Length: 449
Image (cartoon, rainbow, N blue to C red; front, top):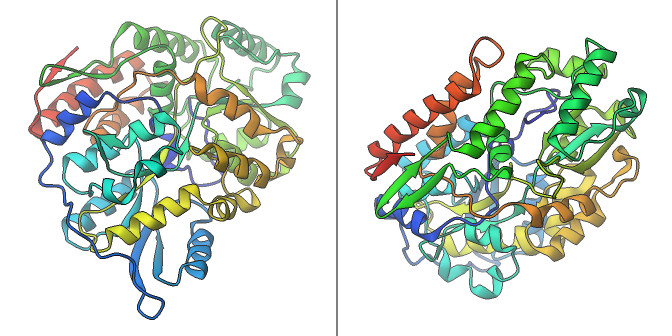
């Protein structure tokens, strides 16, 4: 599960964002519930004497520096930046602002949440502002994650295959092999607890179900799908239950921690070397550097363990830039969004100082990020080389549902009971039931299983 750096704010990107292809038919069902998404003709960029003014809301580090770089080089457009909270609170603010008619022109939107905004008619179709000459630069999965019913609803930025971050010095101390399979991962957890009863291989956070969804994804799960004109929801397919049983076993045996990501005890244990590893997307590399700077040179990155040793991954990251339906400057907003994702100066400004380690969805920009990222914290290991290798192994076929903002919230309460008598299977059952209710409330046809 996600092993957040509790010493710093946990980015919303930890909570299940998509990279794999989403079925167009399924996304068409989302669009069927849209309440008239705006596709109005927006004015083009202004002039240096009278620049177009746009607002941009984001939770990403260094976003202010990126905005400053754009404003200094684009006299026809002026961007006003506001930092918002990541996660549920941030999305609530965006939804409320758009409903009130004063939403930002542009905002960060995770792939998993994008269908939610589309279904409510809160974002604009920006296809005419983002031609194929632009979208062709992005990884196919990122394009599919932002393309609904053949229309472009956001400009993608990154792809986030799950990776294993681990304390190489402590793995050596306890003579633990870096696991390539989940069987070896469990064996390491057992050996570690025997050698040091206070230590745990990882923490399984009980305030966020997103990394579990990525692990289920890796195993071949399909939480959402369609049949005819109806959504299908199944958080209890064979692959998901296999992963649930595995992690429940680790929890029951006391082989992994069950603290929340914000628990000070988790930060203390990680600082003390009693939490040896983390499972997260490429973005985690930057947060580790910030949260545990005194452990520089002690961390390393590896591919995620798999069930049979064959490279495979799910995703727990990936975000885009969406234009709200209230924007009167969609063309300018789309131009800024495209620049942030495809311009070398923009990517370098975002990565500078190690503020970001996300893997850009444009291969040339991934190269820029790779060169810009200071890998000293990881002992000089080229973490981008590893994430580039992992990205193509993300399994295709995963589709996000149309109400993920509420789905994550519905999973939160039962997830919080893990390690306290609750079970992953029970949490998934509750999450499925509540998700079905939410989809029905959105006016869509839906069935269980």
